[in-house]
Image (tube, rainbow, N blue to C red; front, side, top):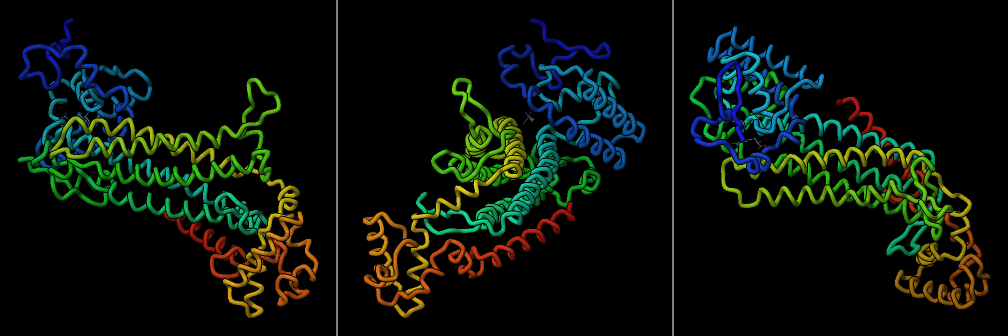
Length: 474
Ligand code: ARG
C-alpha cells in the first residue's frame, strides 16, 4: 500500500520521513496514531501555535509576513475543524501533525516554518496545560454549584431531624442540614484541591523544544503572556517529561469521586424500602424492564459505579509514569484518553448529583416515626447522668442496662416510667423526659461544629460566604 502523501506537488512520507526508507506498517501506524482522541486538543494546539508563530516573528526568527501567513492559516484550519471540513488523517499520527501538514497544504513551504524552535514534546505538554486550565476551571464551577445546592437544601431543612448512623446502626439524631453540610465541607476541600492544582497547571512548557531548549533567540515570556500563563517551567527537561499536573488533577478527582460515591450510597440506602427515609424524584430514577413496581436509583448507582473509572485513570497514569527515565517517551501519549475520560466522568457526575439533590424529598412522617424505640437518645441519658454527678463510665453502664431492660420488655427509653428508670439509677428524675426526645438531643449539641440548629446555621453562613467569595473570583 502506498502511504505517500502529496502536497503542492511535493511528495513526502510523513512529516518526519526524511531518514526513513520504507513507509510505516499499516498496523504500526494505527497503533501509534493518537488522532482519534487527541483531536480534542485542536483549539489549544492552534492557540499555542498562533502564540508561537507571533513570537517567532517578533523575535525575528521568521519574517512578520511569514508570521501573519501562519496565523491566518491556523485560523482557517480552526474554521475547517469547526465546520467539519478538515481532513483528519491517521497517517499524520496526531493533532499536531495533522494541523501542521494541513498548514503546509494551505500555505506551501512557509507552513514548514511553524515548527522552528519547537518539538511535539513541548507542544503536546503545552496543549495539555491549556486544556487543563479550562477544564479545571469548569470543574471548580460545577463543584461550587453542587455546594450551593447543598447549602440551599440545608437551609430549607435546617430543623429537620434525621437519624445519624455509625456502623450503619442508629447512633444519635442529627439535623438533616448537618448531614448535608458534612458533604458540603468535603466538597469544599475538593474544591480547594482543584484550586491548588490549578497552580501547577498554570505553567508554560513551550520553548523546551525536544528536551534541551533551542539555539533560536525565542521569548518564552512573550508566549506565556499571550496564552495567559502565570509561570514558566524553569527546566526544559522537566517541562517535557512530567505529567504530575495531570496526576494531581486525577488524584483530586478521585478523592472527589470517593466523596460523591459515599453520598450516592447514602441516597441508595435511604431510599430503599427498608430505610424509607428519602424519595428520589422520578426525574432522577428509572424503572425496571420486568418489575412494574420498581423505581431504581440508577443515577446514584452510576455515580457510585463510575468512581472506578476515575480511580482507574489515576492508577493507570501513575503506572505509565512510574520509572520512566527522562525525557519524553511515547508512553506519555497514554495520558490523554484517561484524563479526558476522568474529566468527562467527573463533570457528568457533578451535574447529575446536583440535580438529584435538588429534587430529593424527605419522608418526614416515616423519619419521625422511626425514632420510636431506636434508642438513639441513649447517649443523652448518659450525659444527663453526668450532669447529675455520675462519672461518664458509670453512666454508660447504667444506660446500657436500661437499654437491655427495654429490649427485654419490648419498650423504648421514652416508654419507661420514672420508677423503672429509678430502679436502675436513683439519680434519674422527672426532668429526664425533657432530655430524651430527638429534638432535645439535637438542640443540646451546641459544641462548635455540632448538630444544634445554631451551630448548623453558622456552618451554613460560612458556606454561603465561601461560595460568594469564590464566585467573584471567576
Ligand atoms: N502524540 C504525542 C503525545 O501525545 C505527541 C508528542 C510526540 N512526540 C514524539 N516525539 N513522538 O504524546
